[in-house]
Image (cartoon, rainbow, N blue to C red; front, side):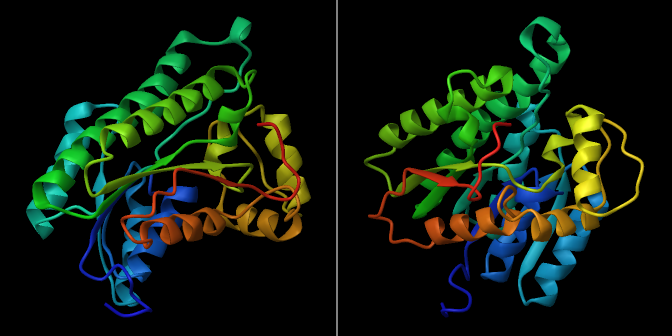
Length: 273
């Protein structure tokens, strides 16, 4: 194991890996030597990431999956273990936000948030931890929460992230006698497609700040160049997905006796999203 590839010989799974934070984490872990299984819904984006990882000397596979289905999450873990014989890192990153006020909210959107942000993460934690136990790994479960979990009035989305924090803390206690650590990462405002379900006027404002002239439709993914420009021009207000990925890499390369519990990653000025 070299300093340039500290994760050589290890297997990692990253959910929500087709864009934003998940994509950055997958590429970072791959460059560090891990065999990465990227799970998400946008195949082309994940295949592009796989190509980058392989060009850097790593190994990666893209898997289309709906993490709201527990069977698909378990199948994802089984596939990684069957292919490599082990699991060392499980990154539960998939998440979604519908920011409407409670009195105006759609119960189906609430259901989507609950199933994606909580249920999928729970199943990923369970399946990942059991697989790590079975192969005797010195493993890491990494849950991507949000700084919204630090606010009591952060809405339905924030309530799902409060749940993530509680799940992480509970699982950490359950695994104290195991060689498995649980890392809870709380990003602040990061330049990603996460905000695509926000009001179109709000999104259009950020696109304008990026200096681009493109039509914005609520719910649609924005081009990568929007976020590249935003990250550069609004560094005080928006973090870069790479910032979060570097923190995750740091956490999973610590000795197993080091328990990094909760990590906040945010730009200098914080937006309450």
